[in-house]
Image (cartoon, rainbow over all chains, first blue to last red; front, side, top):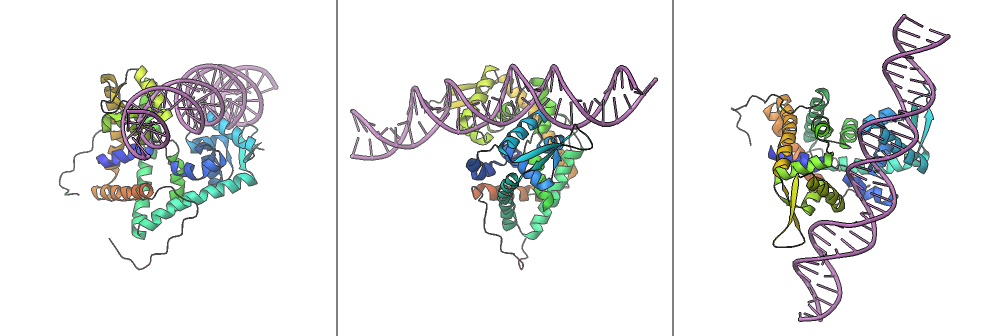
Length: 158
Length: 158
DNA sequence: TCCTTTTAGTACGATTTCGTAGTATATATG
DNA sequence: CATATATACTACGAAATCGTACTAAAAGGA
């Protein structure tokens, strides 16, 4: 359990570092910029708010990122027809190409998992991971003194 | 598999957001500052380099963070006796108190998992998670075109 | 319709992060 | 033992992030 906590700490702070090493250095982009492109590739066109929420960043930060990317010609922004306030963000050709390049790296990362895990393990892992994600997502912000789990004694583990 | 990729994207960018909501807002700290305190609480005194590595941040960033925290009186830094170049970073009383407060939140987060999972699931999950972490950690930077897994068909292992 | 409120996004200044250059101590090499 | 190289960290300026104030379009309400 200590270990899980440590893993939490260690890998939680600046994830996606592995992508930086490979692609970011060549093309001079921040992780945020890159992530934005990848999200757009994966999810298709999105509004600024949707992007911000997906990135977990404030909208004002998203504005900065989008401005950079637009300036570099990786994305385009156009006001929605239905609602003039919302801006639809779209990948340009160049942007799409870059995103696909980066996607390779992410897929390679997932590929490693598939290589290391048996299919059964993989399935187990994904199931549990989603269950975990759901727990955190659904139950909202975490408060300091949530009631402690009733100690389960009988189990003879590890 | 798509789902895993999406989870990767969504939760990967700014983790620990759940802590911000609770503690950061009260005490006016960045996530980095808070993480640093928690790491020190968990691992004990550390050098600047060790901290930086644990945080996944460049040493220069670590210097900034440490300067802030020192100024606020949460940590103290002293040159090591053996090597005058290395600075040993230590939590002050106040720093330790803050870190412990935050630790409660992390533990509450883990508690949720224990609540949602059966003990068997928990054990499985941890095992797989560490295996996954190990894969990424041990094999170094990920290259775009790693050779695809040979489909493992026959193996019926563990 | 006119006015209020809400929603989507931008502007901007303050703070944080980060790459690079610099400093000082330790270690290696001749 | 002198000097070159490596290591641990800091300084500093440039870039990124973020909170708050602001603008403009949409939605509600009288």
